[in-house]
Amino acid sequence: MNISTEIELGLKRLCNPALINDQCFQILLQKAEKVLGTLLSEISEQTLNDESTINITSKQDIAKEAYASLVALFTIANRHCLDGKSLNQNLQTLVLTNTDRLPEIIKTYESVRPRLTEVSKITTTSLANVVDVECRLDYCVQSSVFDDVSEFLYKVRLKTIDNGTIKYIDFVCNTQELQELVFKLKDAVRHLEKISSAS
Image (cartoon, rainbow, N blue to C red; front, side, top):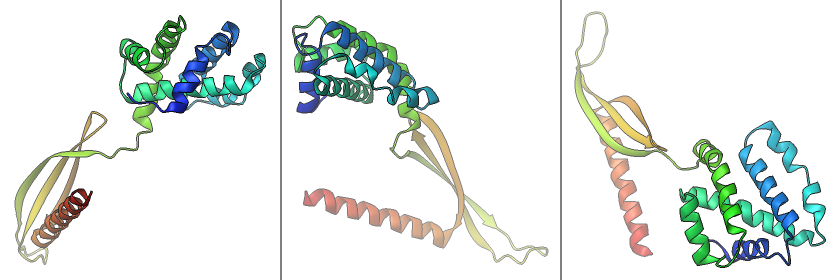
């Protein structure tokens, strides 16, 4: 897990008792837990507008930086699917080697992690991955009722996985449409190969 130098600095300040006293540290942890635990609900809007907890220290800018770093750390750790133990190991190697505040940070992360995981599944920006294609040939026969021209029809089923959920996309196309689809896919592959070879 890579974190930026700004987040690393904010976390070091969070764990420094000379900059963030114990009372402020506890309030920052509680606020982070409350905000991240109520994401996408009406309660979180009220919590975000409440700035009174930050005003308990004379170093408000440092407290705000530490709070932002804490929330960023939790979201990055969740994005990397880290549990408390893994996060603890990462933080010890990256940032915080000798601090007694680290177990409290890990405990808070463990309490908000299920909600963060739930929210990240809802708000993901990734597209579904096509993992399998099934194709079946049907034949359209002209009948006395319909004035259809005899042509081949292909029933295509794409199997996709999106955040662990399997979904199917079904469609029907004729020979010409299937050839156009295959041509466009080959063209996209060639384009991506050009881009990757250029860099």
